[in-house]
Image 1: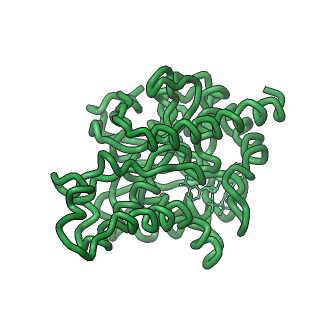
Image 2: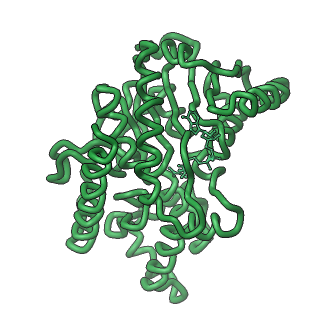
Length: 322
Ligand code: NAD
């Protein structure tokens, strides 16, 4: 693996669809990596995207070399980000996609590992928690080097919604969504803060703030993808920026706290499941899992989310004969 002293960072993107190319565009605009290779089943469409992205190079904050990738490019990659696979159709849950995308992942991960890849996997494809765990199994890499986008997007959505509610910058909202990136996720209200003030105390600043409103805000966040998919067929900008945020935290060795999907091995008294929890992300991937204190209700909901994911993973692996 490269050290952070080595200047040239390489990201290989596998799956240049709506999410993947939005990620590529955001990576370029933020100047996060020097090299970006794009691989897609539809090589012609991917080449079109490569050409289009390169035409913006003159206006980017720093130069990113973008090219049509091959699996061999993964050998020198710091990060392989997988956005390939089927997405949700209106009415489908993320868990409905499991078998289809597991089969796609089995082949992709084998091709990446055959290149001699020795970096970090970043996974966006849904159901992201289940697929992150599958990548750990398929790749044989240590779990800290396989990171799912988890509830980074859901947390960003929550910070946006709370920012709107309190007329504050989302940057000052320290509230997290954890659990499955999906229907069983939960907000951690009991430890959320607005600036330095506990959220539940901040609510007392004005009679127009009501604790019940938090429930509506959370439901809006949890169901945001369904509403967006109904309107425009897919969600991609928010996840793309979440993926860039994780990429940056890795490449810059930031030690930033992000709610990624991570393999639990005893943390939260849970074993053998990938799920969204606050993690410290650095150049080595997940450097530490933060165990947040939860109240009884939060703990109950988190346990339910864990059980939901555990109930999906094993049968799906058996269905694809692993
Ligand atoms: P899309 O259909 O636009 O793109 C998928 C791309 O994957 C296509 O370009 C397709 O050619 C490519 N592909 C399929 N199989 C491949 C293979 N074997 N090798 C290489 N490329 C392959 O879909 P999208 O809207 O970009 O969504 C991609 C995934 O991201 C979906 O699973 C979606 O649910 C997920 N997603 C995740 C989040 C999150 O928060 N984690 C948010 C939004 C979407």
